[in-house]
Image 1 (cartoon, rainbow, N blue to C red):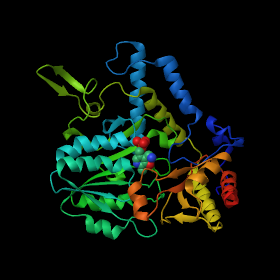
Image 2 (cartoon, rainbow, N blue to C red; image 1 turned 30 degrees about the horizontal axis):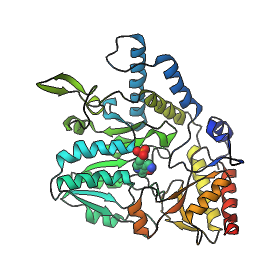
Image 3 (spheres, rainbow, N blue to C red; image 1 turned 90 degrees about the horizontal axis):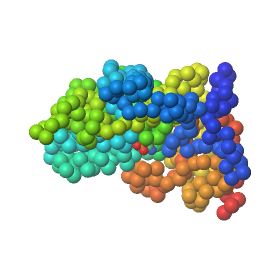
Length: 406
Ligand code: PMP
C-alpha cells in the first residue's frame, strides 16, 4: 500500500461513515449500488438552496443569474472531467438509465431499421438491455449478445465474430456492476468505429474507479450517474459527440428545450438544451461538480489504495474454503461477487448487516448474466476509496464466522 496515502482525513469527510449500525461501526461495502457523499458535496447543495436558489436560464434577476452560472459551470466541470471537446456535448440526465433511454429513443428509434443489429454483452445491467429491447421491438432491429469467457472476461473472439455489416450500434458497460470486469472498451470502440458502428459506453461503474477521456476513447456516447462517484442521486450525464447530437431529435419535450413555440409549430433549441426538457436538477448538478472537485483534490495513491484493498479481499477470500468467487476477470475493479456454499446469499447478507456490514445480495440488475452463470444471485462486495484495510479484515472475519450460524 502506498505509504504516503493517508486514509483517515478522507474518511473524516464522510459523515455517513461515522455511525454505528446495529451496535457496530458501519462498514459500508455496497458502493457499486451507491457511494456515500463527502461533506463538500452536501455543503455545495445546502449552500445553493440557502443562498442562490432560483430557476435557471432566461435570468432577469440576481439569484437566477447566480443559479444559471453555477449550473452551467457544473456542466463545464463535467466537460473537463470527461475531456469532452465542448460543454455542449454534456447533457444532464437523472442518471445512467435516463441517459441510455435518451439515446435509445432519440437515436435508436430514428436510425434503426428491420434487420439492423445492436451489439451488447451478456454482463450488461438491465439499464443497458431493456431500452434496447424496446427499440428492437419497435424498429425490427435485433440484439446480438457477446458472451463471457469462463473466468468472466468479455469473449473478444466472439465480439469480433459478431461485429458484422449489419451492426449499427455497440452499447457496452466499461465495468461490470456484478463481476467487476473491466472491458477493453478502447479496443472495442476502435474495432466498431473502423466499420462505421455507433458506440455507447455505460460508464456507471467505471467513473468512480478509472480515469475517463471520451476523446481518447473515441466513443459517440458515454453515460454515467453522479451517485456512483460520491455525488448526489437524481443527476447523471450523457456525453454525446456534437456531430451526432446535432442530428438527433428531442426525446422529451416541453419548456427549456425550445427556441420558439407557436401553435403552428415549434423550433427546438440546440444541444445540449434540446435534450433537457423542464426544470433541471440544479442543486444536484452543483453537487456533482463538487464531487468531481473532491475526486480531483484527492492525494495521489487513492487508486493504488483501492487496488491494495481489492487484493487483500481476494487473498482473504481464498482462505475461506466454503466461498467460491464468481468470475475471476483478468482486469477488474473492487467489485467482487461470491457464493457461500450451502449458505444462501440473502441469509449471509442479513447476518452481515447484524454485524454492521453493508453488502448487496441478489441478481444486481443483471439477470441475463446470472442466468448465463446458472445462478439466482450472488453476494457482492464493492469497494470505495474510503474503505480501510481494517474494514476488509473485519469483513473477512465475519464471513469466516458465518458457517457457525447454520
Ligand atoms: N449501468 C450499470 C453498470 C450500473 O451499475 C447501474 C447502476 N447500478 C446502472 C447502469 C444504472 O444507473 P442508475 O440507476 O444510476 O441510472
